[in-house]
Length: 207
Image 1 (tube, rainbow, N blue to C red):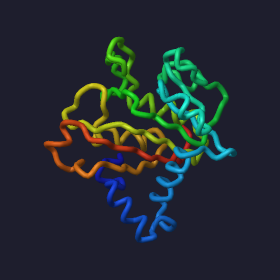
Image 2 (cartoon, one colour; image 1 turned 180 degrees about the horizontal axis):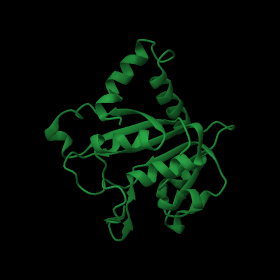
Image 3 (cartoon, helix red, strand yellow; image 1 turned 45 degrees about the vertical axis):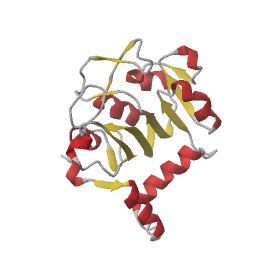
């Protein structure tokens, strides 16, 4: 089983250094990251991308060529659905990119715990690690890219994934990940408070 120590972990400054050294074109992991960054900036007209939990950022992503999904109808997303039912919501649609933008994740796979929603005044079902990866696998083309922007919290609080716990799920659900982290990711005292991380993953096979 793949563990955190088995995958590529880059800090943002290391990513920038590789850019200045001209290593991006020969490094498959960096090429993966760059493809995702290009899609986040503007979706290629020949590609399809879906943002999960787009919320109030829906107009921003639609203007960049992405389709969107959210549980709440007032955001006028492409699909109105709980991300736990992602593959049912999008039907036969297949995507080249899926972005989970700061979506709430439950660190206990399959646990139905409810967590406070973004507005703070309602509760919503947390999306389990296994659900996110399984559903993303179902709607991505082989070779498609999954981007997960969230925080890492070593304090194991519900609502945020912990990198060591999350990593093994990628291999199980057909993905090869690279992790880009903030500079203080490796400082335990800081990490317990939550630090920014972005997962970039390639779908290597169907479930």
